[in-house]
Image (tube, rainbow, N blue to C red; front, top):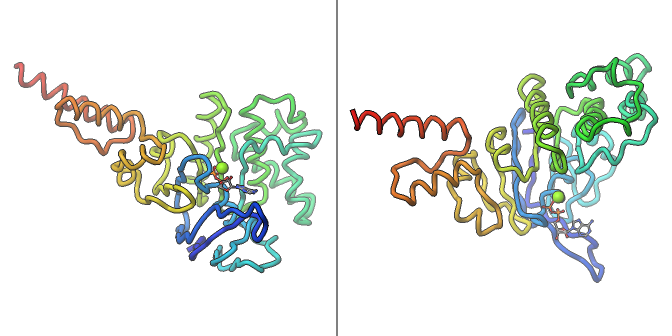
Amino acid sequence: MPIRMEEVTHTYMEGGPFESTAIWNVNLDIKDGEFLGLIGHTGSGKSTLIQHMNGLLKPSEGTVIVNEIRIEKDSKNLRELRQQVGLVFQYPEHQLFEETVALDIAFGPKNLGLSKAEIDLRVREAVQLVGLSFDEIKDRSPFELSGGQRRRVAIAGVLAMKPGILILDEPTAGLDPRGRDEIFNEISVLHKEQGYTIILVSHSMEDIARLADRIIVMNQGQIALTGTPKEVFAHAGELKEMGLDVPQVTNLMLALKEKGLDVPTDIYTVQQAKAVLKQILEGGGNRRA
Ligand SMILES: Nc1ncnc2c1ncn2[C@@H]1O[C@H](COP(=O)(O)OP(=O)(O)O)[C@@H](O)[C@H]1O
Ligand SMILES: [Mg+2]
């Protein structure tokens, strides 16, 4: 079990006048190789939760165990952990600062004290993993790239640390549809072909439904729902009460059902919807014949 959280509570500015508890008594297990989708309204505690998984935040109460490293309130030396769990922040490209793409991606591995040959190799591999051409991009300034490319360079910088577990906090925020598709495709490749354990925070119910093996829904600092996409999106009413939506095709099925059509409502991808609608249309054709 690479990640386990036991009764984790996090309070910001503990003991001060502005003390506020962001997550409460969270219990959770993430399996090796799992693709976990994390959804929830703004302020529900998603970013706080994931920052416990690489030791950036420590629990005020409870325990986080990652690859057998225990993290508690007073734990120290979490450097090793940050290496094993890569965290891609929201708008990670804001942290690019080196003159060239290659130097930027090399920054983390350099801090690990690796040899020059190993650093070069890692940079090259990381660039390829995010679907960019090393020779075309290595000497360019990060600032002359497109938004989608910049973000991929930032993700490559995390991958160059060879983390094994990759957490992405709204990795497609602010990108156009093409940039979004590119990033999601790369994440999918990292999961399927490189065996990465992925934890993805996203507002896009469609993408979460399509990519995740399991979904966790956060609401007011606690886990409100968890299950496969099918199980979670079956709770359309509850999700709406939490200010969340279900995928558009699920809404379509719910609307058709309301109109009296006998359709399943646990549909959450376009492919599934297409199959169901095709069956209905063909069924209708048969009746006419
Ligand atoms: N650094 C911080 N200091 C104080 N409060 C914070 C800090 N970061 C987040 N919070 C508060 O914690 C709660 C959860 O926030 P966050 O984890 O960012 O949620 P989400 O990522 O789901 O939007 C919110 O009420 C937010 O205002
Ligand atoms: Mg957040």
